[in-house]
Image 1 (cartoon, rainbow, N blue to C red):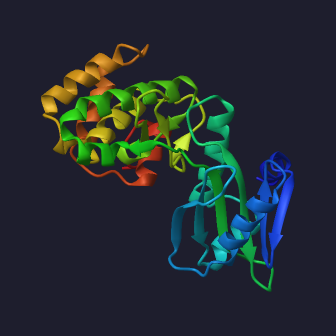
Image 2: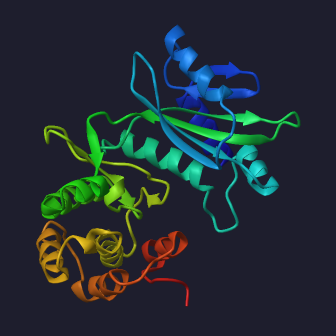
Length: 279
């Protein structure tokens, strides 16, 4: 990751510093944005993870702030190293995956920068990700709550987004309704957020990966808004856009995932090994 870490810094050549905090940014900082960043970095910790819009007069921004609690995590962030399982910590995964997805032309928020706060000993205490704020958008879950009669519209938008992401080589393993951002007027493309659990590579087990993605979207709240058989029919229709899908292998995962919760690490086994869990 040392090389990958260097590439990250190279991609964000401008810095903004406040007390023990540093932000690495894509573009130079104007006076008004500097004030916004100062307010962000001066805020006292309120929770382990905080996500909120930033009030900027120039660009609409969104910040995620994560407290690094354990010593091993602080050391990994400082060195840019992976965990034993081969993954980076979730915040690093989200930063890298979102930047890569945007580079490939996927509809995801643009990464503006990232940063950290260090202790007197030089270890990171907090990590920040700053992205573009998707204005005039509503997430699919809130859309379903407000307009349950439009469930098929939300599902259709999500399936189109899923195909677009997959066609770009971005396989989102946490794409549920709340991570599908829909334009309120329907004139802008549907976008994805929260890419910490995704892959930017060709899946060695495409059929199983698709089985998980479609089953997971149903499992996370959508099942409350649509009959299962009708959802299955919409999935079969959506699968026509994909080539080389083994429907037996697809269904083996799809039917399981529709009716049970799958942990974040288990999802990665589906992509990498074509199975749920390691048993």
